[in-house]
Length: 394
Image (cartoon, rainbow, N blue to C red; front, top):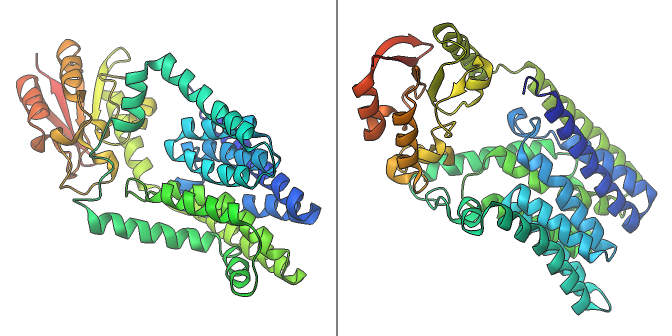
């Protein structure tokens, strides 16, 4: 827990595995040249989003090798492996289950033994999911993966905020995929590629991005593998110079996004580092602290133990759903979270509370339980970079 290096290396490995799986699928369908093109194109466009979305070790990055492997295995008639890969994708992130759509399409196109293939696929999907449910408790598994926060998966309350984010991230992804989109569009106009499973994969992935109506940039990573294969297939029936153009355009876009990641300022990180330094200066190594905000890395940077299992205000207020106000508050949090939170604070009061809401909708003044807790035991001691520090009085 002293370094993020291993996690970053794992993310690099996940991207390489995704590229290899896509290259293998393209090679089987269209030959060696197409395989090389698919692998290279994927790696070039994989950074084509806001760097905080595409160049970080997000859970979508670790989901993508499973989705690409599911299609690769189904393309070869390896149905149990395809099912296991779908399960791996789904257990990494629920929307990874979208990979089941192309798998089932390829199964339907299979010339013989469909019943056996379907059974093997279902068993492959079900075994890891059921095992995970049994290990964690079926009711808890269902709660935390499906039913736990109905307020999160709603469109009401922040329509313009959410739609603006969706459009912005779609445009950013289009810029990152500038080398892929022209051949796909051109082939749509002049020919059919016979890639119905890939179109189904793209449509199912787009549905996964829409699910929940939040449109965070990292959600869009799920669209890149099917886009790469569709573009690779399109380039096979276009003149050779089209492939060169696609590679050069993708390389240029990749360079721009890498420069963005290297040179763009990081105001949130700078704020968190200042906050962590202040927390470290005002507490001892054995003290527990509560940072009321959306930056859990503050605890890690400060080297202090959290006073609660809830590392951000998200699960307690629904702010992590990207809402801009109307559906943020105690009543929108995950069911049962506030009694647990209040119990934790009562049994082990933190030595320091940092209110890092800075005018956002989860400020303590909008949360009666937290406001009462602060008023009963704490006094305001300082303001650091807009965050209010409270020290315990009793």
